[in-house]
Image (cartoon, rainbow, N blue to C red; front, side, top):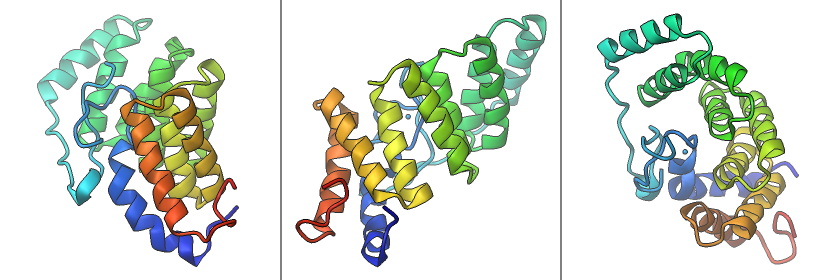
Length: 203
């Protein structure tokens, strides 16, 4: 279902609660909530309306990693590391380039595919973001960070509240006690509080 005026009215509420989770699996440590496994954080507004600053790009580290990537064309790791650096510096087009190279080498890496999808979202390409999330979920249907980001992009990138609600319900089903599950619960509570009984997304 496409959102109506009420849906747009709650967007700010939901965003303040969960936008910090619009991150890839590689990017986040649990900074309020903010997606190698959750070690760096994204530069989206965090819960409570706070914002996080983009990391300063370490050009020396970038050049060193590019040298490794050039010497080792079949090694995904320097490409992932480069993409993460660019992501943290909010240089998402560059992140897309390196995540894209990495997934060619490791097509079944759910974390990298999710990070690529998040980067697409930040460059106003929600359809490409959703396509990457679907590829991730084809590999691991229970990947909580992918499901959470799927809901966020459906809600804010496509104004599809029903699709977002379904994705967040799935997060709660597969990982109810995780930080992602808690973020999904808050998002659903925000949606439900804005809709009359019987007309909630996913009902």
